[in-house]
Image (cartoon, rainbow, N blue to C red; front, side):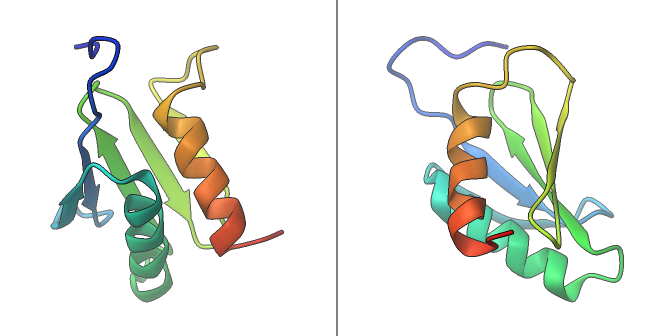
Length: 90
């Protein structure tokens, strides 16, 4: 489900085995929480689920994988990736 312009995306941060960690509307907080979970989980990644139906896997080194994969990587995934770049610089 696509969100309407001007509405906030709600983020759910989950462990790789789908245990909920946090819910927020702040992209930087979702990024920091996911990165912290990736550091402590044996699988070395966490997932951010956006209320628009997209999922972003956040790996320990800061790289991400968007599902469903699409040419549209703008919006909240780009915002989260910028925050990750500040938290886990290459």
